[in-house]
Length: 103
Image (cartoon, rainbow, N blue to C red):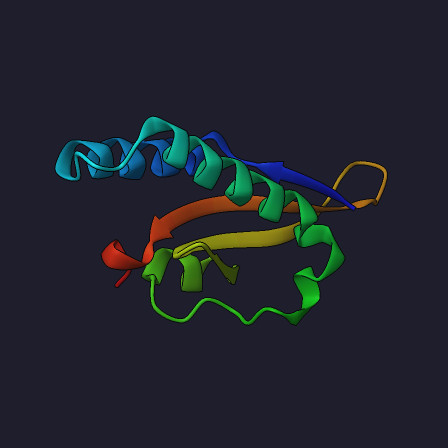
């Protein structure tokens, strides 16, 4: 199954780590790049087990859109299963937020 990550998700990850690097001078760019790589790889592998994760329960927008929630590396990701014009199911990762900002 194909996984598509919305640009919003990438921007949220980049924004969080940019702020983290400014606040924590010991946090290296190398460490951040490794964390980002792990996150993207984890999202790509979501197709193997997407069905085990629950519906979102805290962010209003996520609940209203009936999205499911996946947590990895202290990030919460909202995703939905959509069908393309050929009827193939696609995992569309719609939003992300770090657990420190999750409410």
